[in-house]
Amino acid sequence: MLTSLNARGALLSAVIFFVFMLAWHIGVQGKASVTQMDPEYARLMGMAATQGKSAMPGPLDVGAQIWKHLQEPFYDRGPNDKGVGIQLAYSLGRVLLGYALAVLVALPVGFLIGMSPLMNRALDPFIQVMKPISPLAWMPLALYTIKDSSISAIFVIFICSVWPMMINTAFGVSATRKEWLNVARTLEVRPLRKAFTIILPAAAPTILTGMRISIGIAWLVIVAAEMLVGGTGIGYFVWNEWNNLSITNVIVAILLIGLVGMALDQTLARVARAVTYPE
Amino acid sequence: MSKFISIESIARRYPKAGGGSTTIFEDLWFSMNRGEFSAIIGHSGCGKTTVLNILAGLELPDDGLTVVDGHAIEGPSLDRAVIFQSHALLPWRTVLGNVSYAVSSKWRDWSAEKVAAKAMTAIEKVGLKGSEMKKPAELSGGMKQRVGIARALSIDPKILLMDEPFSALDALTRGALQDEVRRICVETGQTAFMITHDVDEAIYLADKIVLMTNGPQAMIAEIVENPLPRDRRRVDLHRSPDYYPLRNHLIDFLVTRSKTFKDEMPEGYDKRHPPTVRPSADNPLTPGETRKVA
Image 1: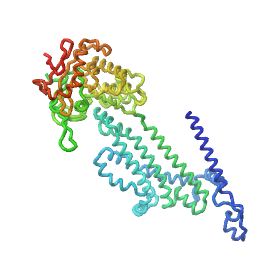
Image 2: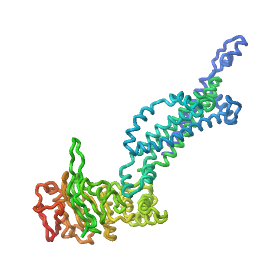
Image 3: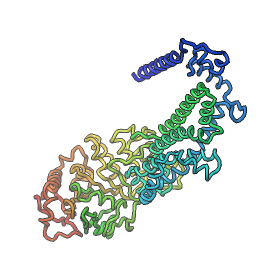
Image 4: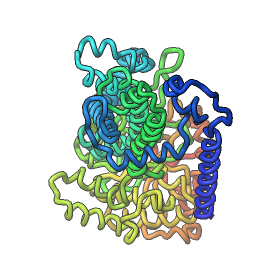
């Protein structure tokens, strides 16, 4: 039953995909009427006006463009013409660096907040104020103080990933079952060993949920941040191709952003499954 | 002669919502010899669990002192193992992992093989050989509690403390586990202290049954000595001539005297030395009557 449900789901997905592609293909077919005009003027107007071709690329154009990118993902022909693979690598690098820094800060601080009701109360107002701030609002401040656009982007990733992880870690740690802590107490387990052998595994599923939320937000934010700071990255690529009026490349980039985001999320989902314990 | 376990005038009070405090019990005295199995029965709220937690070191009394083997209890200790009502196994560890965790906590410098061997001995003792690599979620309630027992036994505790260990199990499983605990305690001379609501469980397992009156201001009404033979078996308990006099005495206490004891205290009742009684076929006690054993 399960396999047949999976098979039917996959089939339905394929049908939806095909219908969407067909609708897209038909939707971007050219208009019948072509205005007659002066050839000089027609050259300025482009094919949309002269041949009735839609300005919106169709699925076949996008497919061809993807094929082109796949054949040469890592070329580098100057600052404004780099392969999409290089741009993605820049974005991933920034996200992973900012995210790793956030893990280093959020997990210990979250542990502290979760274990100490005093720290919980003391730090709660700061977290509540910092959490709803749009990460991009930090950008001018980061640019002013750090004076480096690339590091500023990493800082923005850090600041947006840190809160969900910290809050979930604190919650997971404070929700460790009393009976497990009592087991540790009756076995005279020392604090550090207790933290690593009881509290960490008990809170791990909650912590991983926070980390999944964070990586999702980080990947959302990097695109916007790179549009602002420019230079390199998939966000910059999108903006640059928009300025080039290459809608095909914009669509390719959107697709790639989605695929990479999914891969990041699935990686953490796999880790989360590994640390989840059935009760 | 000094006792193996001695509870001396302990009190426990909780703050009340509107200020002041509620006294669960105070000036409570009780002692146990080495190798003795004591069960404490009483209604909910009389502070049984508090007494057990104090013995475990998880709670400290507001007054008084608890001495085990010549040392006052100041906190939890590996000398006193607790079997929790909810088994409290770590779900991310296997059966062997759970028991090994206790063993390696007690003997910190042991090698991994030595720890595993010791843990396996305890697992075999409770009849779980073959399931040692399973996670708790794959086990039935009875098997989980067996792991809890194995974990407690694996550290060779001076005292085994049990907080209604079988109350969450079905009757058949409960019986089987009572047999195991009885066998292990008799064979190894394990000192044990148990909370129970089940009169038959107390009769089968315990040498001494402590009767606690209703809280707040709970008191130990009497200590009942078990007149049944030491080699008693669960299946033919009820054929012993002493079974019904003992059982009736306990039921009478739970039904009526646990409430009325406060107002009808027997003459000469001394909190420090609660009367010891031994209801048996030759000495059936009428409700309310307490006869001291010579």
